[in-house]
Length: 254
Image (cartoon, rainbow, N blue to C red; front, side):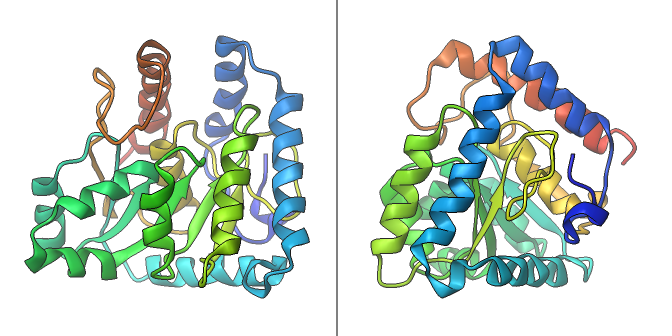
């Protein structure tokens, strides 16, 4: 578990947000060793590229910038895999900033022209484990939107593909790196959570966003959202039940 004392960046939240990660590894038959190996490789890959914006100090600056934008009491909507344009329009009308859970950013492409640019300007962050649709993610990255790139045991090919595409682009986006192991890892943080959606909510709270200021859009656990990308439907539904448990821990006292 990464605490503020360990990493100097994220606030400590609830121990259960970290211990549940061991439970879902057990439930799916995953090995913590694989999660850590992927996370270590992610940090090394990012720092070996030697893009100035991706240096450890600049990643910490990106976290600090996000913290500053969230600390002002700004309502923030997290765009989940089942989000629809009408929900985003309502959130924008209420003054919300936006954080997209991976492929959920695709909903911005369906917004009316009158609000689409507003939505893009208010997009603070994309939380991604690399399977949200490469072209869609690249289009957002080109606008300078930061990405929280996540490593777990079976997504190394996805995050490598994403990083390569970012590095080859004219304007690589700012990055922060996340993992899901119980040990401290220099260069990446564990905000808690499991899926891109609940991890995004955990990350917002860990960065100082008040829980009552967070809106969850398109977070359904009984259907696989259309922004989920290519996935095994039955496994995804199992994952969404764990998402519900994470969100219950995070928001039950709200």
